[in-house]
Length: 363
Ligand SMILES: Cc1ncc(COP(=O)(O)O)c(C=O)c1O
Image (cartoon, rainbow, N blue to C red; front, side, top):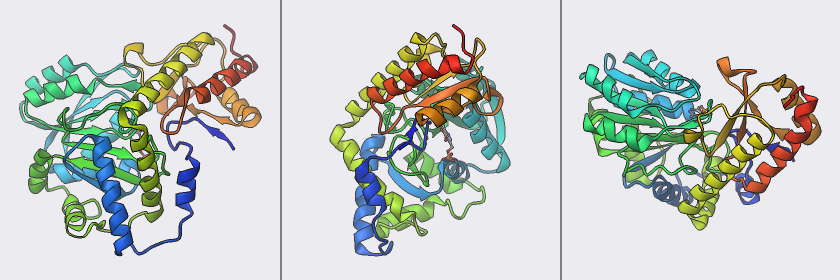
């Protein structure tokens, strides 16, 4: 088996693999209704929310589009707080659907600054919503969302959060931090395959939804809500196998307990950071905001990242991620979310110790 250490998809536990081999059932039948009801209740616990939570068949990006088209109208002013590739993607979706996006960009590798968010909101009172990425997977940075949220709520704006790679792994109390919509993806910390986005929708988000005029059909939250509340069904045929997988993985997560899961990711994240530093490498992310689900590492001192990834893959069966867009060749990333322990990280660090000199790295 390959040792898949990218920031999603993640390896699946055996119990989840077995769930994936189940025969299909009627998605409009009693058995599926029971499973969907349980999965939704379990997700609410792990989102730490009393609000509505929906399962939408589609990848995380589909979930981001759902967030935008369900809460905004063309011409709405939106503040985009962006610290990397995925922050830019969220903004692009809003722009494509006609929002007037006001960008607030921070240097890649750094976290967003809450005071700068305050200044941006002061400068433009007509802003309706703020887009924030909780964990920027492309740079390995986790934003201080509690602080950013309290600023956004001082101004009473809608807070729309890409929590795709953080929810279920890094603490994110959706209700306590007043997230209006939070979206995550099944292939991240949830120990399930790619293919479903999960979203929470606050009361304020529902109010915005009732006035939102962006075109939507497949992603319409009104449809999702009426099918779930009236029949415990999804509006359209769901990815049934992924719901089977989630029904098992969420039970495993609840058995471990959310505080324990969060603590395990913190330990694993620390092990990854300590490990790469012990090899003489440096972190791309500022350490005070380094992510516990993905570690981004600078390529330096002669290191050929492409060659290193190839040797790791071919000779050690370890798969790590490169850098995205302008970070290509400049960084590489170790994913450590979902089904992962400190021993898994030790295996990666030991292999790196052998491979780095083979790929040109000189301390
Ligand atoms: C923070 C973040 N946002 C958005 C996405 C996009 O999700 P998907 O690739 O499932 O469309 C990802 C996936 O890596 C992500 O990590």
